[in-house]
Length: 180
Image (tube, rainbow, N blue to C red; front, side):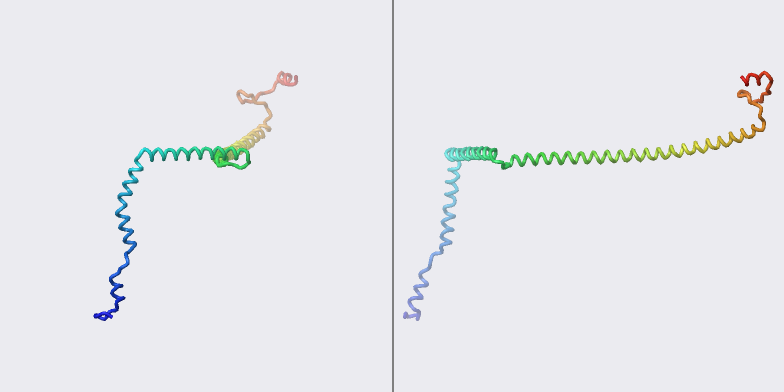
């Protein structure tokens, strides 16, 4: 034991500290971050990077084109519909739906106008029927009046001239002509 009454292990523990690794990595990261950013910016602006990037893009597009051509030729041989076929069919279905909607709209409009025309014709026919009935009533009334006049004239049997309405006396000569 030591003079202060502490054990030697306790002092040694206090004097030896473990380094904080998280703090060490933070310090290293922030100190090297600017250097890495500048290096990457310089590399991205070089012609070699742009050329490499364009070459990668061209290779990707040529592979994409080859895959599409192979897929199209495969789908032509096999009866599996492609996206293009399904899209074309979808367009045709949409066009057909539009035609059906237009037909339905026109049919509804035509039906409505025909209904209006038929209602007008029915009203017109009803008015004509009423007018014909009215004319019939008037004719019946005229016939009744005419029969009354004829009944009154039946008592007086002498003929009446059409022009003057006066009664004519029959002579032997007129009776002879009427007999011919």
